[in-house]
Amino acid sequence: MDWTIYWFMFPVSICVATTAMLSGIGGAALFIPIFVIIFPILGPEYPLQTAAAIGTALMTEVFGFSSGFIGYHRKRLIDFKSAVPFLMWSVPVAIIGAVLLGYLHEQDTFLKGAYAILMIVLCPIILRHSAPAENGSAPDSSDKSETQDREVRSVTDRTGRTYTYRALKVGGLGAATTSTGAFLTGLLGVGIGEVIMPQLVKRNHFPVAVAAATSVFMVIVTIAVASFTQVTALIAAGGVNAIPWNLVCYTIPAVIIGGQIGPWLQGRIAQRTMEKAIAGLFGIIGVAMMWIVLK
Image (cartoon, rainbow, N blue to C red; front, side):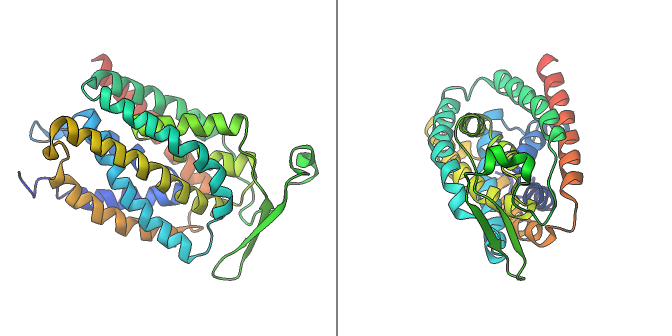
C-alpha cells in the first residue's frame, strides 16, 4: 500500500470541509465526485469503487463535521432542542439506507446513476431556496397562520448577539423530507444536510447562523450512524483493506482543520452566494456523473 499516493487530498479536503461548514451541506457531496470522477481521470493507480467511495466519504465527513460541531458549539449557535425532532426521523432511516448499500456494493453503475439523478434534482431545489435576514426574527404577520402556535425561541452567541425565531415544525412534509434525505445519506452519502438546511431557513425561518450550526449537529449524528453501518458492511464484505486507509490518513486530519475554518468564516461570506455556487456545482457533478454512466 502506497502511503504517499493521495498526498494532494490534504489541501483539497481542507477546502471541502470549509465549504461544507459554511453551507451546511454534507462534505460527502463533494468528496464522492472527486473519488468517482476525478480519480479515474488521474490514472488506474487510483482505483475506488463507488460503494467504497461513499463509505470513505461518509467516514471522512464524520470527523469534519465533528470538528465543525466543536467550532459552532464554542460560538454557542447550536439549538439542540430543535435538533431532536429531526434526529428521531433521520437516524433510523439512515441506518436502513446504509444497510441497503451493503447489498448493492457491487452495483457500481446503479449507484453512480442514482447519485447523478440526486445531484441534478438537488440543483434547482437549492437554487430556489431564499434565505431570510441574517439576524433572524420571529415570522411576520404573513406567516401568522402557520407559526402563531409555536413558541418563540432565542439563541445568544458568544459575542452577545441574540437570534430570535419560532420553534420549528417537523411533522408531515418535514418528516417525509428529512426521512428521504436520511435514506439517501445512508445509501449514497448525500442528502441529510441538503434537506435540513432549507427546512430550517426557508420553512421555519431560522436565522442563517443558527440554522447552519444546528444543521451541522444534526448531520454529524446522522452520518455517524450511517458511516458506522456502511464501514462495518464494507469490512464484512471485503475485509479491512476494503477501506482505503492510505487515503483517509490525509482526508481525516484535513477535514478536522477545515471544520474549524468554516465556523470562523461564518458570516463573512453571503449565504446566498454559497448556495448558488453549491447548486451550480451539484448540477455540473450530476451531468458529469450521468455522462460517465451513459458512456
